[in-house]
Amino acid sequence: MFKITFMGAGSTVFAKNVLGDCILSPELGEFDIALYDIDKERLNDSLLMLENINKNYNGKATVKAYTDRKEALRGADFVINAIQVGGYEPCTVTDFEVPKKYGLRQTIGDTLGIGGIFRALRTVPVLEGFAEDILQVCPKALFLNYTNPMAILTGYMLKYLGIRAVGLCHSVQVCVPVLLESVGMEEYTDKCRWKIGGINHQAWLTQIEDEKGNDLYPEIKRRSLSGEYAEKMKNDLVRHEIMHRFGYYNTESSEHTAEYSPYFIKSGYPGLIERFNIPLDEYPRRCVNQIAGWKEMRKKVVSSAVEHTISREFGMRIIRAMVNDSPYLIHGNVLNAGLITNLPPSACVEVPCLIDGNGPTPCYFGALPEQCAALNRTNINVQNMTIEAARTRRKELVYMAAYLDPHTAAELSLDDIKSLCDDLFAAHKGWLPEYR
Image (cartoon, rainbow, N blue to C red; front, side):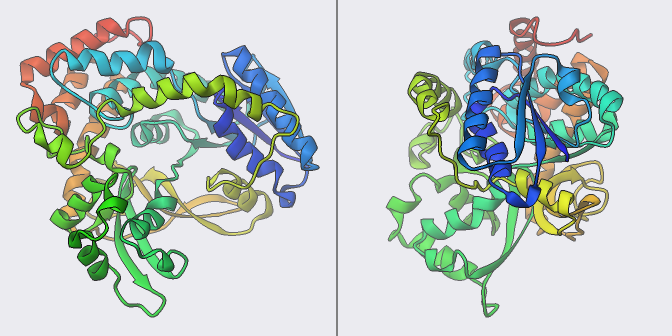
């Protein structure tokens, strides 16, 4: 018997994917699921959903909901984190609307940029509380972090909180299929070999070959430039542009990628938004649509007839590999410490990790193409400075993190960036600890 604790279990659909996967895996045998959330209504929805999946698929899980965090964690072997501190309202709205007053526009705002910085600052104190409880009641548990900003939060936990942790994202799993589909080369999806490494949401597809070892990049790039696949490529133009300018395709979607660099969202070049089909305010739009559709979605999710199929998430596969000591390779977010030789040792990087009974063992990657490492370093600068700001609670380090952000710095003056940060501190009052 082992125990999985899910923090942020009100993320009902995501809990369905990760925990439903576990229930549908007979190799796991019997296990306990503990659900924790501060939203009692959504917590109960997730409880009903998982109980129904467990019943419908002859699962061997025991599912229980908790409002006491420490009791939910007590004795856990695995802790899955999917919290969002401050939710869509008020905090996500604040992260988007306050920067707009300065002319700073975002697409997703959860990983880098001014939105990512402040999302990290309000999430770190909650993770500090989690870690304190974990060290008391389940010190050997593996913490599986799914919450963004991935590199900042996972890096903070690994550097300063003393718990076992790995950060997980599904952008690596979908990178190659999305690229191949966009240029009409789907026949290679399950018949190719590839290599990916870098940082979360900006890892690089450094190699893609067919089964005979032939490089597929030349044909991918030819088709990308041909104009024949414009319709297929229309929602991924930023990544294709990065591939042609810097040589390699990266793992995260074009709407994310657009705000990780200074090249695409520029008030002085408004035509870029249309040219690259950049969806400004995309994350708030998704939130509004999800909230509006939740009533209908809820009927299906908590129904006694709820169905589930195994998802692409790594969570269940990690748990299965550790419980059964059966090796499985994932891509995880871990501290670099020489894994990628031309990125800072202190960076949180996304690399292959072997999972077995001992937990995650990161694999040596070597050097990235220098131009890819250079782009990563512009993001790592922001991530590491935000980590130090969160650790010390010093405003001047928050300013520095924002000064270093590629998109923010390309749009605003130093004075405006500082003023924007002060406005965000004021707007997020009550959601942030005191910064001096």
